[in-house]
Image 1 (cartoon, rainbow, N blue to C red):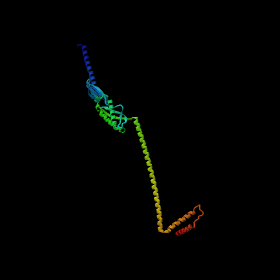
Image 2 (cartoon, helix red, strand yellow):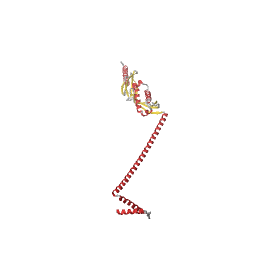
Image 3 (cartoon, helix red, strand yellow):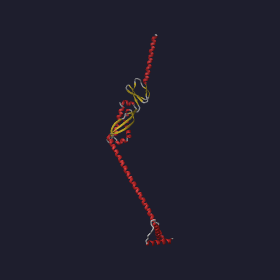
Image 4 (tube, rainbow, N blue to C red):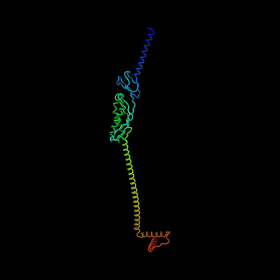
Length: 297
């Protein structure tokens, strides 16, 4: 064997080894799959579902298995949707809703539903219309939290076969048509006017009650003063009667004479009087009074 033949054989062997090495590298690259934390990969073998790869390093059979779908498992938000609904009391409302969900079983999502976002939006719209149709407008406004909870539960039940978890459902706004708004505004203004009238009437009633209480208090105080005055007069009369009973008629005459003398002195001390004309009978009475006072002294 010559040198050329030997070199040719070595080159062929080296080429085979090189091709084998390259093939091993390619097989290794094809077999090893690294899945990000936020994703799950659906693997098909001969066109059928074979497995679902979770986050991390995974191994597949090269050329037999292929990654058909890369599904994000992050929470998603559907675009805000508006749908018309009619309440139990026949009021047309426009409801703005938003739904948050995430895919938990990608094999169900990719093989059972084509457009998951559109399917969820349609489901939410139907449930919202049905639930609002069971409630009056006032209940829709006041029980929004309960309505949201009910919608979330019903949507979860409806999309369970699609491998989806509904994390949140929100009713962003409930809009009314213009005619209903005008009617509600009139009702609100009427209620405000009624409350104002009630408040004014209650204020007037309270004012009357306070005035009556004041008049009653004044009457009670006047009656109390008169009662005290009557008690004083009764006491004075009783004292005089007791004095007369104890000292006889002479004591009473003495008091009368004393008052007569005091009156005469006061009359004489008046600056505008220089001459006093006294009847004869009065002089006799004053004389008797002076005698009585002299005798007492």
